[in-house]
Amino acid sequence: MRYPYAYGAGVIVAALVVAGFYFGGPGYFALPIATFLLMPLVEHWRGVSRWPSSRRLARLSQRTVRRYDRMLVYGALASALLLGWALWAVSVTPLAWWEFAGFALSMGVVAGLVGIAVSHELLHRGSRFAFPLMATMGYSHYCVEHLRGHHVLVATPEDAATARRGEPYYAFVPRTIAWGLRTAWRIERLRLARAGHGVFSFRNRILVWHGFTLTLVAAIAWLLGPTSVALFVIQGAIGVSVLAAIDYIEHYGLLRAKLPDGRYERIGPAHAWNCDYLITNVATFNLGRHTAHHERPGLPYYRLRTYPDAPQLPHGYSLMLTLALIPPLWFRVMDRELAAWSARTVAAPA
Image (cartoon, rainbow, N blue to C red):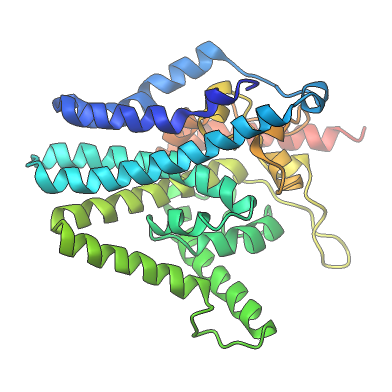
């Protein structure tokens, strides 16, 4: 999207959650309804966007670049401030169980779509704020594993975040969480060993930031009470589940070939599912431009370009996330897409 302020979805989402809370009733479910029922319709109505062209990128002014970066800051602030407000709100507002469930689901969707999208972009910018944002979901080791694990091993059987063909989402989630933590620990252990430090030290980022999460839980329990603790834990669990679902749809069934020397072929357009739907990319800081992101991980989100020769998801992220939760529908749609893509790549040399 050529207009920087279009990427202010995080602020809009935060406002929707707050408004839904004070509206009450179905308002507690406003965000899930908007995300999973209304957004797919809007996505197909609005269609795709293949912006930016190389000409447009060459003409980006510093003022425009600052505006794009500002949207990232607004998204981070909206996510953090919304969580702080929500923890306080449930501590002072009596809620029926179904109202709390709807509100917790809304906050989990915010964590998974806004918080993680912002954290992901900040992580690739080298920002120190990626760790604390992910710590609010109890998933700070992601910041270690993602750069040195996923981006190195993507589209291989060794990658924690690459779903295998025929693997249902519900089997992928525990595998990616456990494998990702193990990979992150190995990466951190090797990093500390090269620097001459032991793994159990204050230099271990996994221990430090998971300790930060536990400290947050203790502080929330002391200051706000058990209902706020429950909200914090549930929104984090849902946020991590949404992250796993995004990884699931971005790499499902795509594998790099192994070369005679034992290494894998270079990452290319064929190793990530792309999505050019405008609403998906505006809402997720261009995560749908996933091939471009993997080929040049340090590129800012507004410079990621579409790859017409890469595999394309048939729908936007909102509908694809819903399909992932219903394995028979997912396999019916995506195994057909995967077979068509495989046939295309086999036929391409001829």
